[in-house]
Image (cartoon, rainbow, N blue to C red; front, side, top):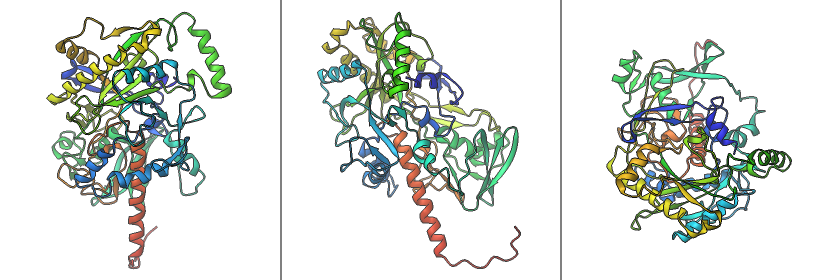
Length: 499
């Protein structure tokens, strides 16, 4: 449950905000992003999810050879240290710990039974043969503690002499000479300095900051850069476009047994006991990732894969945990998995210290609202199941008086928020709408790649943490292959080299 503190604080969180969203009552939405080693994997809900295999096949079919499900599955398995052991879909020897929840709240198990009553199958493994249904999530934890990308991939190699880790630095620009990346400029404790690259520069700043850095470096929409007096190195209009995110709306219910995690009488002694249990055994309420259970469903039976995802929390959570809710209850999130709305990241200032302009353009495509509304109805049906009867449950939001479609649409406009999965702003592909090629090389610039969720051509049907790690592994293989190729070519002697 410490995740709520991470979402509310600014120490490890960029604490971004979108532009006013026309379809959401002109609200500006809060976008938390990780500001520490491990990025957002260090502040997220730790759910281990790969997405639907067909999503990756779609990437490959769009011209990205080598990115189909059969290509990326071996990498997911290579990374995974699956608590349940290895099989044809899972690995057990990798650096990324994937575990069952140590002690899920009883309400999370009740959610699973309620989902089954609502017509969904039980799913024991969302990364197994079929992801449709309801179940308990697996998490990137070891013995109840977060296992971020930094712990999995960085900590084991910190000792290497060819690795230098700089923290409390802000990358302000990629240095590009004659359309070749030669290094980066960083701000460190009030001073700027340049770090030179012998081979390549790889951006791994995420869907918000990778396009921001490209534009600050003169690579992006030429007219936009000129408006900010940034010299245009390469006019690449696609940089920052194709922004996609999972928009999410919740329904909440109160319960009368205090089984949930809540703010009320008796909460303090319970919290003190939880601290002791977590300290001594790594179990209990504080080992929870909050979103303990969930599932996937189709709002239209003719679809070939689920189009909505549920996240169940055994607590009342409003506004990302930033608003205190008194009492006991539970929250069910539902998000549309494949929105057709497209937004953009652009610069608000030529200063790297200023947040970029984030416009997800939520619900700008007419089909998206209907899918989200159908998902909300499905969520309410789950929370109306008889499985909740022992807890004396009653719906808190949207509330019994909200039933008609226009009323539900108004509720969505007032309450929908991000579920933290922005992607796509440095799109991978071969067309004019792409920023990087299938080997993640930035178009028009030598020795520069992007390796993060921004390269996703389309949003995958699930949480984006594990797929982002897979993208990093793919990038490392492309880099290694190009390095081997360059070493195999006979190089002429260097003349007049000044060092």
